[in-house]
Amino acid sequence: MDILAMDISDRPEFVPFTPSPPRKKMKSNEEVTITGNEVALKTPQDPRRKAKASCFCHAGDGDEENRGVLTQCCKNDCDVWFHDACFDRYVEGDFIAEMMVDPTTKRRFCSRHYCHTCYVNRLRTRAFEGEFVTCTDCHLAFHVDLRCTPAGCDSDLKKMVITCPRHAKPLKKLRCHMRHCVNCQKKSNELSNKLLECTKCVRSIHANCARSYGRYPFDEAKPVICPWCRDLQFVGHEQYCMVAFPPNKFYPGITIPNQDYPYPKGAMAQNLGKPGYTVIMWFGYKKKPSYSIEHHSSVVEMMERDFFYVSDRHNKLMERYAEEWDEAQKEVSIPLKLIPRRPDQLPLPGQERTSYQHVTYLVKASKATGNGFVNAPPVKDPKSKEMFGPCDCPKDVERIRCGPNSGCHNRTCFVECPKDCERCGNRELANRNYCRNIEVFETEKCGKGVRATALIEKDTCIGEYVGELLDEPEFKSRVARSERFNNDEEHRYVMELLPGKKFVDASEAGNETRFINHSCEPNCEVRMISSDGHLRLAIYSTKPIPEGREVTFHYGMAPLGCGQVPLCHCGAGNCSGRLGGAR
Image (tube, rainbow, N blue to C red; front, side):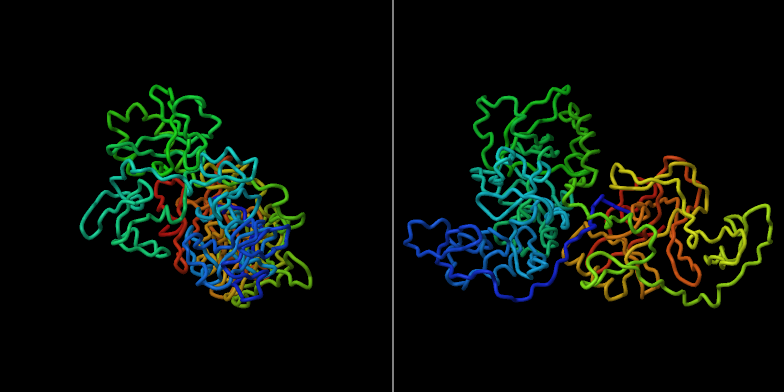
């Protein structure tokens, strides 16, 4: 059920900020010299001063002295400072102050300690892991990986510093703007929903669409800055894109590393490696590519079946790029791929999800017993006394009783037979008789999945859905946190066990069944089974599954809180587009 192959086995615990004495505080007009972990205050006249203390939330606006004392980032050797009040109000780059709290010290840290690319793409678990390269001129940081650093910023990766496109010298005049809204991909320009042009890039957006981004204040009377620029989103390396050309044309291409530019000493190479410029390899006529160096403000990412593709793909001018454009559309339809995790980022031995495959339910261990999980007591079936009992299947020694086609009364009612039922085929969960003909594999669009390694007959028990046992308050708390932090990596791996009271969460512990993907045309279903008087969840096949076919079931997800149900990529003919809706 790993929708985007997002590994969240050791998710950081984000805790609410509680006021505590900061590591260092100082007045805004004092200056500092950073030496190891020590911060030495210097007077403005000291010729040895190395850095001027200023709040990163509004650096350079000239109003530092009126905002009080500064707090230093809690991370070691970090020379970033901020006012607590400014920190709480800061929203650029979708900054959420509540997330930026160290779980151990309960103190705040700045945005140099997470990957900005992963963060703005709502991959807000992996964003805080790994090694980062920082910008020389601002507080942004990125993973040391070409898939995360902005296009054109590959020259100084070995030095662990870059200058991000945010500090590029702006063009005297933007080339041209989109003729459609970048958000809804529609062209209408009615007075009630005017199409507005961003002053920072070539995107256009409807006024109503801009207002829908509630985290950013919008005033049509002021210069318009689109949400993409407010999020500080940049086109990445080897990313398909559309580039603006006057008078009103956009052409498809792909960004490539600076080192791959074939004319480094040519006349057009004067901007190669400069902040805010990237190399574009254009879709080639007769597969003969051409190259140019373009400003980031003129480049926008290509989207799946966007307005450009729908309206221009069949134009005579674009027919020469048709094949490459079609291939690019297949690529952009694939969700963000998993950034591989280094060995030191993986769970410790004994903490892997599969290590819990023979345990039904778990609860978080207390601090006294250490980290990880401990066994949880089973959940009693409140109706077990009414339904649980021996079946009336004939005692035929020639074959197994109570099988899928036996007509067993208990099996029909999703109740396993008692222990004394001889030669019984209706005790899969109690005896752990799960299907062995499955394997976990990497799908094309949906991350990890499960497929059949041999024919799986109808009504076969694929496996039990196991994980951490939650009560209702904890379940609601996790849903609220996921929605509040806009974290797409915290997809809900939760199934309801006892309606409204008990839930099973496989996000941090589970077995192969947690990787089973959704399909709008599934071949399995989830059943709540009463086994020896206790409730358990299991996945059963609803039709024969041939070898090599992916095992799927319908998630039936519903939006909780203010969040949306994730997009569906199952490709079925009756696909609803979301991991929910009518079956």
